[in-house]
Image (cartoon, rainbow over all chains, first blue to last red; front, side, top):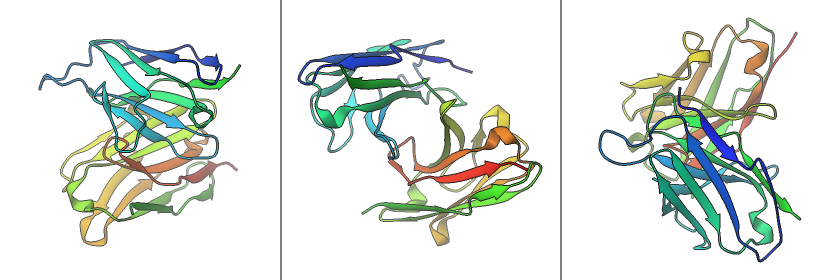
Length: 112
Length: 114
């Protein structure tokens, strides 16, 4: 199975400042069709996860443009340009280039 | 508005069975792959199973193969997860998910305990 490793696991941030989360896969996520199926999710306490980014860098409908995704191969990053209070919670990466699909262990974004 | 409403959860003894259902509305159910994802405080999110649009393709995480079965009824806009031979480590909140995380249900708790 593809192992997804996120870092850091906890990220204290100051509101208005940028934040960055890394996700590394144990093997390349480039699929046979040439696409890379790496997604990012955000989960607020007591809520279901919400997808923010699909295929590395595509924002889902309604996702603020302060969120951006980048990376290739086995190394990916989610960046928040200016953290707002509503961004707090846990962020997960998910790969669906290989079966079984696998999640990272999560990164908790919290107020410093 | 997309709605995914899970039902059928609860407390079950080890070795027992449960059938989860997910009633979908607000989108064309028959055109989407569907997925079950589970979550525990200890392990976080875990992808469980995915089914394609007509049910001809199914994929499972190794830990549930032979015990959990995903299925769907496009005429009823419904997704199912038949869970047999349940173990304590199956205890989790189970989410019904459209595609690869496009939309999520509110989740339903399954507790396997004697």
